[in-house]
Image (cartoon, rainbow, N blue to C red; front, side):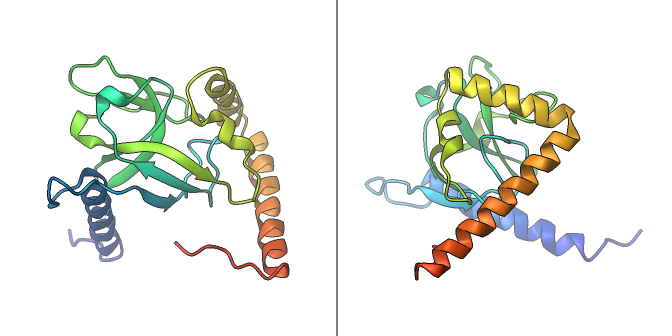
Length: 186
């Protein structure tokens, strides 16, 4: 059967993008004195609602596994895709476990080589940093997971929340351009 030409270029682009991010965060090909750099990325998925919303800008910093705590949000890669999910368990010898706040189940075990970095900063797409409270482990992360459970199992609640957030984001963009400021380019 012939290969689909529409998915092949997209798959190779995603693989190249993942490779570039991994090189940047891990410092591959750098001198030992050069420190790996943080990267900024736009969130597109809905798996981390209500902590991260589509359109949010996140900053990821490189880190070693021993620096992490359960409950932090980390960036990992698998099969040419990014996963920006909450770290559940570090104690696995073969890897680590992640879960999106609004996902019904735990992600399959990630090997340690898949870890790219941790979330260190969030810029909300609607100008409101109300979700920033859930970036760190603790009670706020548990509250975010409870709300995520609601979004996971009640589709109407998720659609309403996304619609409200989208309106807030577009109003924020309008007020930003009205005041003469320009949205930051990535």
